[in-house]
Amino acid sequence: MYAVKMIDQRHKVLATGSEPELHRLVLAKYQHGEWQFPVVIEPEQDQPWDDKEYLASMRPDPETEEHEQIKEIRHAHRAGKHTIRAMADETGYITKRVSYLVHKYSLPLRNEYWRAEKYDNPNEIITGQTVDLLGDKLGAPARSIRQASYSNGIVCGYYISRVPKV
Image (tube, rainbow, N blue to C red; front, side):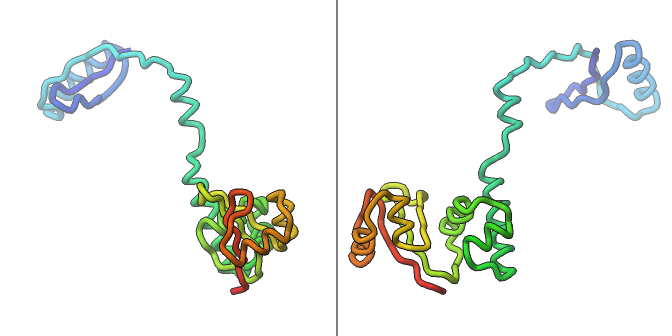
């Protein structure tokens, strides 16, 4: 297999095919004035196969996927779904993922809940509808969580806050 290339700084491929076909094509186009520049017939270079690059191209981009998910969650929010459970039911995503995206992109909710934000990683957020549920998730007593929320304290490496109804 050979390719016809322009001889200039761009090296644009004009046609591909067998050598006799390309000679006829080049001659016909040149005689009719369609190609007024010199061309050369070169063998095509075989591209080495790279498994890592191929597999990386098959993997979806996580940022794009997250933007699509938050679009759907915002659409559900505009449709009147103002609780994490209602948004999860509307979009079909798991509650934990909806909760994470709602807090990351600061969507207002109409129910009050407890929120724990990691001290050294603000993207790591744990939420719960009640202080007991948040305590179970963090592995800390509900009383210490409630106390930390009043004084902006830290429990198990998380800042604790209570998010009121909107």
